[in-house]
Length: 305
Image (cartoon, rainbow, N blue to C red):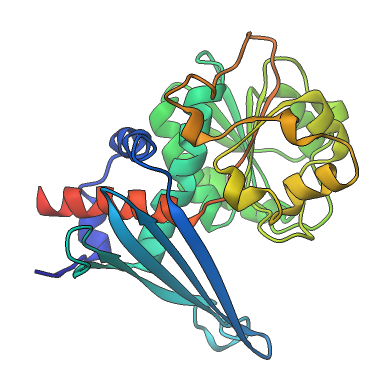
């Protein structure tokens, strides 16, 4: 039987804390095999990401990225997720691309924060007021329900509009001042040159970097990387692929040994801070294996609804 999961209905049955449990459980299974392919037609891109995990099955997530769509009133990205049985390879579920991406991306960062941020964190800064920023507000709000949120955006009016949609949330007019007062900084921007400066950081903070996904993209500068204890969701999908990690490696700012752990080190206790004074920095690379774990969770919630 193949399930076609309806996004709006499915959302009613999903829970951020339950997703964290599912992601932890997924990383107890054998390590995923992953592969990405890119096809191009001018400025348009067809991206397919695949993953296979023994015990969880396989997944192919396809995105059609058409930069000209917004000018025509269409979303830039269309896509779908196919989830396959581990037992016989049959199609088990067809999931909405945006539903899986939302829960995977914010859930990835949330697991990083659950492991690395101080439990008493009470000021959380969201850098970037786009779609991912809204998902982060929901996710972090579930893990830190008493926290006060700040949101900064290059366009101040967008930050004001964002803040008006949530309780205990306010727009931050100055990025440096906001970073200095935050216990957690979670950043989801499309910048290529770093906007987060290591000189702004203070002991005890947790820095969550989401936006960079290409070799030419970074959100945090060399000083931030040097000052922090560095973690990633997966060495396989960040090292060699994303400028946030690879550029400091190439220039000698950090060495491979400075990337202390990824989620496959969870069971060995590797994804932890050593003291309340640590500055922890987590790079969310968002590989297809996380899409697979998230899709498994969504399907289970859909079946149990």
